[in-house]
Image 1 (cartoon, rainbow, N blue to C red):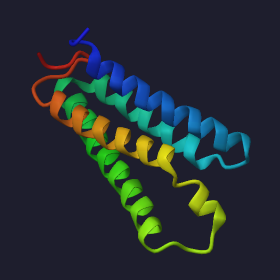
Image 2: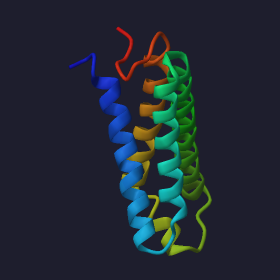
Image 3: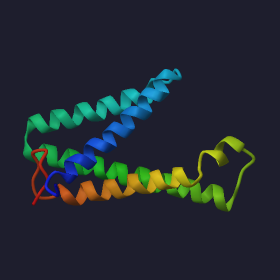
Length: 125
């Protein structure tokens, strides 16, 4: 189970982003879905290109994911410290938003450090 955990984390993160992309596409905004599909395609192409390329791609995705999670946490913290007159913003940055943000950040850091030695969609170890 531990050997496949990084692959599971990667898959779950991509599924979460894909689900969010589909929700936004149903609402008329196709950009999030397009971005997620491009990321998935780049990871697949990197996997086909070779071990070092795939390792770089997953580690880069881990950094982007960690930064995204930290940015979301900072945004929620900023809205808590300096609230604005936007009920929509205040409603959408509650504890669930912060939990998801922390999970994104943790998953990004985990992916970055797990795939440092080798990559074949099987983590190091």
